[in-house]
Length: 142
Image (cartoon, rainbow, N blue to C red; front, side, top):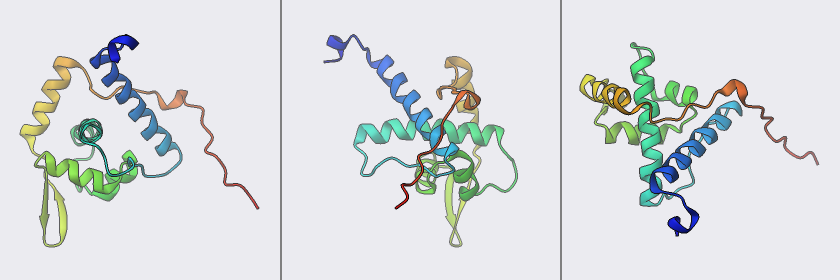
């Protein structure tokens, strides 16, 4: 099917990534927290987890080095806290201790991400939020 549409697999992944970035940007502009509809298919989980992983690792590399909280990351990045926790757990960067989730800034994981970005460029497509012209829909008044 893809050959008939003249879309290669890599181009399709770039398209999916760009749409994901745009959806989360719109969510952030609306002041909401976003998450895909669940349950995700296996391919959907791989696609979203790839996006979440890149966003979170970029945040951890450039963000605050002191107190990190899932809630703060969720509000700033517009990603649901469950998605943040599950992604950080998959990266081995989350620990549950004394009833709280603790984010572990594993330097080896961050260094690996930095090396990957240097070699291939950023995996998250940049969308300039200042170029976005969006007015969230207003609820219908009765």
